[in-house]
Picture 1 (cartoon, rainbow, N blue to C red):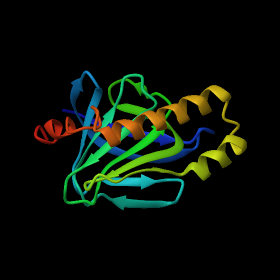
Picture 2 (picture 1 turned 30 degrees about the vertical axis):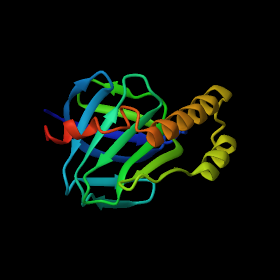
Picture 3 (picture 1 turned 120 degrees about the vertical axis):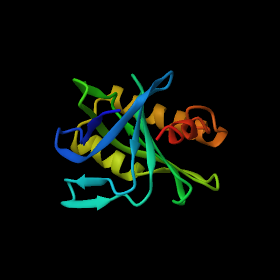
Length: 166
């Protein structure tokens, strides 16, 4: 279990946010990270640092267009999934994701929503998203929405096994 710098950039390459997370291991879904309560998240684009009050585990798939953070029941939100370009690793100590604006959330009560469609539409123009990026992002968002509603893994309860290791 080692520390990894998890970096989010926008499509234009500007730093969006970053945090140091603990690499827990890998399985068929991808690489899992632990995020202890008290983890500082630097929201560089907003100029603020936020301290996570709730423990979480993050999944970064090997080649998927998302990353999902699952939270302990102490938080109302069970899952927050950023739609991203596939992760790029720099050695074992840093992973970078390009945030493509769309987000899927699920509460512990099971409510599922797609967020930031307006931001995605605006950035298609201002960042000049290529048609393939637009297609991959929208297709992935719809797939994640369906998987979250149906609780299909890895958006079911599999993440709990990673909480138990951390």
